[in-house]
View 1 (tube, one colour):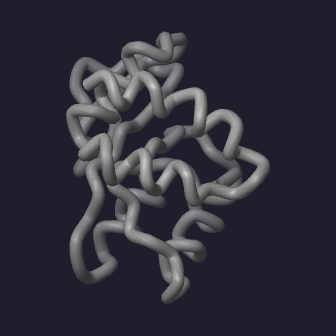
View 2 (cartoon, helix red, strand yellow):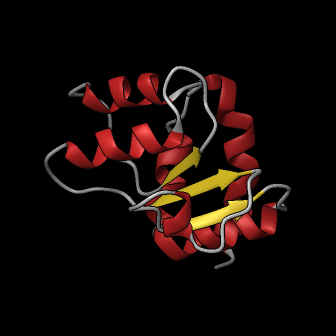
Length: 119
């Protein structure tokens, strides 16, 4: 997704699977990360853990935004990101969802599966 409003719209669709984890850039166009988080947490039901990414410095995830489970400060490397995803999502469920991604991201998702399988 390119912005928070589009992500919320997708989550509202009845056919959209619930995410295991949400990777969120805090500085998106249309709807920033803080607004996305507030709106997302007003939705009923289960809420996926949120890994926020930002170029700004915050001492703690909650300083960046309430209800953020993890905070990655840019630049970060892929191993840092994968470690946080593993912490918050079950690898078999995540791998299954990655296989169902759109054709545009299927190649990238497939390259992550070997790393997830080694957990």
